Structures are given as C-alpha cells and as structure tokens.
Length: 127
Image 1 (cartoon, helix red, strand yellow):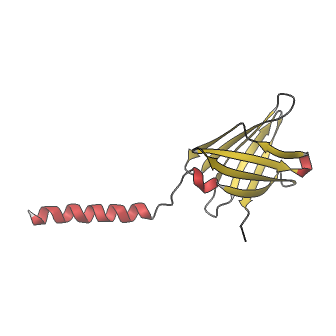
Image 2 (tube, one colour):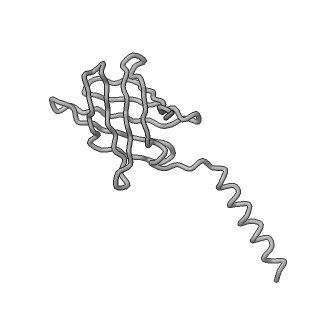
C-alpha cells in the first residue's frame, strides 16, 4: 500500500511546484500609480486602488484639462487584462482596454467618442 501512495504524493508535489512557477494574476497587480502616453504624446496618470474588492481608478491629464476624474467602473478580466470606463462631459465616455506584458507595462487602446488610439503606461515606482 505504501507503493501506491508514493506516486500520488510525488504527482501532487510536482503539480504544486509547477503551479508556483505560474505568475499570480488578480486585480491587485494593477494597484498603484501609473503614468502613460496616449498616442505617444498626451501625458496622463492613473491611480488605481482596491476598495471593497473593486478596483477604482482616478485619471489626471493636464494636457486634456482632466483632474481627479474617478472611474465609472473598472473591471479586471483575468490573465493580466483590465478595462476602465470614465464618464466625461457631454455624455461622452472614455474606455481604456488593455493588458500587462511580461515586463509589467500596460499596453492598450482607448475609445473616446469618435476618437480611438493606443496607450501605454508604466507603474511609478515608489521611493
């Protein structure tokens, strides 16, 4: 009976080692301060916090005259993907959709009314 247990124990040990090599994903990986560019020229920052198990994003873009705009909703889709929606004036919304790459850089697209483009942002490291 000892011999039949040994392969099962080894299999479970190998499975747990393999799972630890897979990077963890979750909404917490987006928490922090981010700075980025839209279309390579419009600067912005997004501060993301986790409040009551929900991500909340706050957008600032001096280039666009946007200060402390809180997200309407933020959704973590798993596998390093994130969507953020902001309600703007004149019944316009800004939708950001993208994902983290292996280096932790967020690449995505934005849709704001009839304007669409690309964005990238990196986490601002705390000193």
